[in-house]
Length: 246
Image 1 (tube, rainbow, N blue to C red):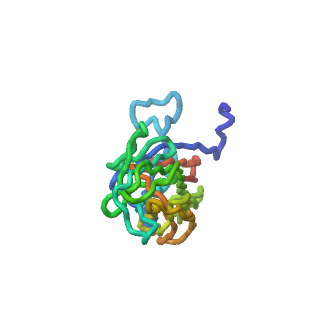
Image 2: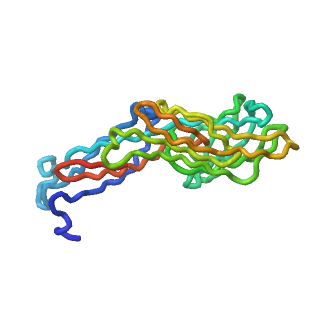
Image 3: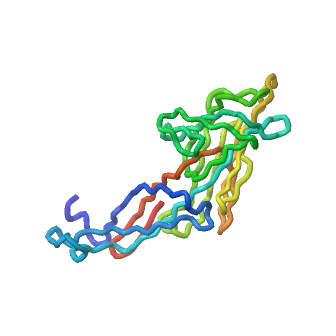
């Protein structure tokens, strides 16, 4: 738009990808604060070999949140944990979860439930996942096709990103089952139900529970995702002042 587009009070939007490290805070109790500012030359003719020729906007803040999810394979006959289930968990980029908690870009990796029936992963972001059961535990029947799981975090608006009280919502399709969650610590639990061989499959209703709160948030979890959470934070920065968005 040329020079006329940059009148007093014009906003510049900076969007960046920030993978969280393994030592990041999980849950809403602390979050992971970011500080961002834009540094730019004072003029096209300024000496740009050092700091003297540059100026910067005021700093702006945003906080990234991440969660931990555990998926437990269970039998419909007593709800006991089942080891040995082989699962394919695919994110919205077509990558599959590997046993070491990373994402396989070729989409060939699988995970297997342990003796406790669990697949535990750390660093979960919002998004949609597809779960497929490649092999059921002995004596049980695997479900056919894929089931989607959607994780949503809401409440990070432009006025309160740095001090937000997020609302976490997780929905799942049967035979996934949402169990419980502690949003303050970021610990989420879900189950995947198998029926014994020869038993007609039952319908497990996948649910969701939105929740808001101060430093404690309760929600329902329904799937497992892993790896470093790739968070996209759009910061709306106003010259002379600061506004920010998720």
